[in-house]
Length: 379
View: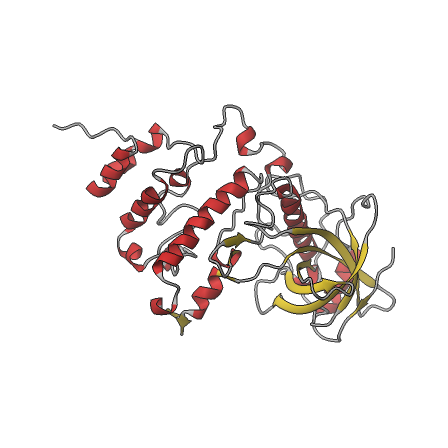
């Protein structure tokens, strides 16, 4: 198997104009966490020196799999960079670039490149080396997209279209040695992330609410984000698990697309478990957002309302919610209290009559009673 790459001499080969000969590849099945055990044997890590990292990468190449039934080859040319990782200046991880295949410059793609040399030396919690970290990201993200392909109402609509898993080789400073790198190709989604919008409205680390989109727009984005996450889980069989502003793209018409699935749960690959709707006695409809995201602050999918809670959405939700957390809960009930028929499973009696609701204010209690909560007994 041979491959070539034309790169510039710099700290990274992934510069604008760089050209790579890519081949179709079958990603390894996900591993670690709820998946199978790590298939890579533990090896002694080098000192964090570039040339030693290269030697380690050559001795511990990306996990190999059986070749695809037919190998497809293309030339991929980089036209722009969205996230160019450099170890030591950020947390490291996959490169995200744009580019085109062969000579067709009219069709642009996003490529996520899982180059171990761009990852932290090791995971401080698990001790996994940088090549293992890159392999795991690649395996989970590629199989998340492959899994969602079975749901036509998901891919290309609320997640980017998927254009396959690929591999290519790059030069090294070691004479006559090249190393292999994996990547996936995705639809290029026009727009910007919620995080980009927040960043543009922040001056000297202070949020200017007047520079954010108006509150109605932000709440529509929040509503679509919740509903997309549930649909991806229920219909696509993938639980995102990293639903932060940097992973929600907003298009010009205000619709959202969820990106970045390297931390996803894919139950079909769990050593134990199954997709939610295939569990015994599972409801026939997806869970209501009321139950899934209650109470919005400070819990529920990390949608905390203050920076002290570490909430990544604290700068997107209405400012009033920071002062009165019940307003967020009221919004949840108003938004999904009367959904279209057969869209979500009814909110359960257990939830409606949970003792914790006794601490809620009278307005919120009245809204819960309209949904079926038993009225408090009068003394």
